[in-house]
Image (cartoon, rainbow, N blue to C red; front, side, top):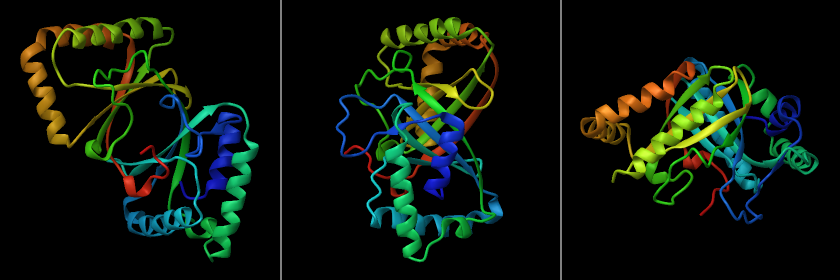
Length: 257
């Protein structure tokens, strides 16, 4: 996410008009809609990209850019910049903020267009958090630094199978309600992006090892039930992708305290 005005322009092209939640607004509930900017960096360019991105974030903070941003680095040489949005209306205030920030950064001698030239490419998606299919019996929602390891599974659904996939996911919820285990997840539906329909299943843990140990323990206890649940769910999926990543709190902005 190198040049906020560029990304705002891409928002207009790819997602229509949006209004963003800011720290000044007190949200009564967790955000349900997100724009995700995925930025790809060639491994050879990663040191230069990180150096320039650190300068960018320092300037965002210096000029008190008040847009919430959740930042992740993945195991595929890319970054997720996740921005909560309220709805698809009202881009003017955001565009104005972006223009003002760009001018301030140029006054500091930083031109993002020049600094990031040739360092990365990107794509954008819009996600909707499916509260009804997510599972948080602890009542704790959202990202936290103590569970900085993340995994995302992208389920590209068979066309027209959303209802069946929903019912299959609810069977998972019913199962975990019936056992005393500490396993939680979020489900995001891709509203706009590449290769839809697509659901994104996200889990968080203290580390990859902690997650693997938890899954191993669950399967040792409930392999028959879990196999049945998986078989019922996967028949609605045409392909899937897995991705690992890490939350970057120092590269994130204006997160809930």
